[in-house]
Image 1 (cartoon, helix red, strand yellow):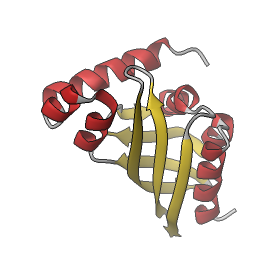
Image 2 (cartoon, rainbow, N blue to C red):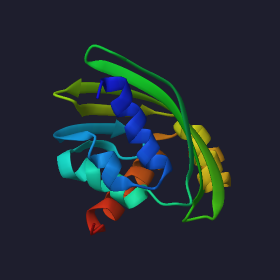
Image 3 (tube, rainbow, N blue to C red):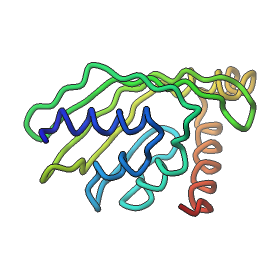
Image 4 (cartoon, helix red, strand yellow):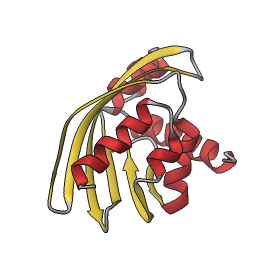
Length: 150
């Protein structure tokens, strides 16, 4: 399987709610980064997907590309944010690095303020651009990840 197919398999698994299919695309020592969780390594990165993936997420992806050991994609997830019950449509650009047929680095970039306005409502609108709210969201996400049992 080439690297473009690996990205497609990752997101196809995501769209099916198959977290194990997703983490099977990752190397054992994968590094993941995004605005909500910060930087995660190895099993923590894999457990994040195990925790987040569920059949109630609608996922679309496109613009998949790979050249050499780098690649990328655009994806959009639509879901209900459990803490508030608000619907979120998160638009994300992903970057990847590959080694030996696996993803070794995955960085998701999205507009945190736009996400927080949808997920958190008025507090996200007023404070979503501040480091204070971003740090609070990250602390909450990491605490939930640390208590998650796959």
